[in-house]
Length: 168
Image 1 (cartoon, rainbow, N blue to C red):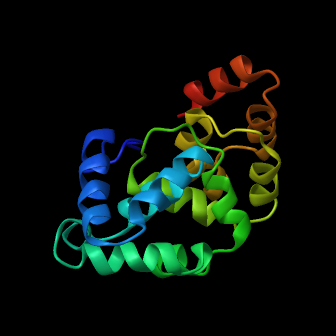
Image 2 (cartoon, helix red, strand yellow; image 1 turned 90 degrees about the horizontal axis):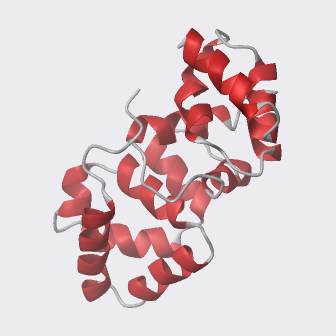
Image 3 (cartoon, one colour; image 1 turned 120 degrees about the horizontal axis):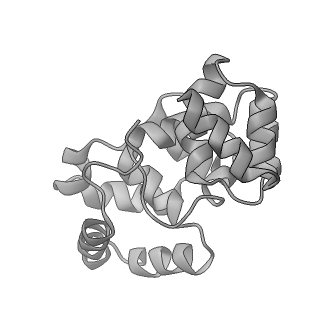
């Protein structure tokens, strides 16, 4: 799975958000607040899940206004096409700061609704790329949850990541 977004990079996220901030009052402050609070993955996920034509086209300004005003789980749920709860949104805040691919956000938000997978993810302090890369295998049952628990807890991460590399 490609983890980094095909059309999202730090450079074009800045370009897209700067254009939206010029047109939508308060959007620049909204983006700054997300970054200060470590919640920039909400922005990245919204941009990745949206149709690139919407994000880059004239509809981008309505998109930006809605992103600021609508409740985060509801907005992400609409973009994803399924219900997302607050726990799913909170998982985004545990990711490293670089934007990810649409598939990574889809897998993470989908996994948040699955038990016991969602519970294990919610207890993690951070979600390393090894966990995100392996989510499809955890969701399908190809990898045991115990490996995810080790990775998420930060215990035996080298051993667990080695197991993941061997099995992927």
